[in-house]
Image (cartoon, rainbow, N blue to C red):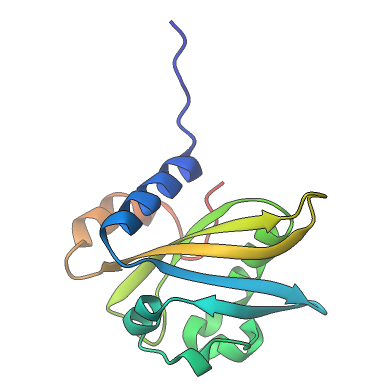
Length: 150
């Protein structure tokens, strides 16, 4: 009997989709124009958990959002680059605007019929650090924050 390999990103994507059926979706999207990543969409619930306003994010570039991602700009930018090249990316981060949580994020590139990426959609789950310390110690401590898991 052949053992089936579980692809980590696929499993996490399925768990996030299941989460979204039971809770408010935490989604944002971005595009790339002239070498800059620009946020085009974000759900109200994600704004709420990150303690942000829509105008803090929409039509802003990743360069303008360093107050949210802190000094991890290069890691986030590299994750966006991987997604823009057509790869699914999974990572987690602590937004500087709400350090009581961390966001588990999957970046899913969207492509047209010619396989040109036109947008990346990010699906997130917010986890309260105080409630899930054991899980973070057991699972996520094997990965650095912002480190893509591929």
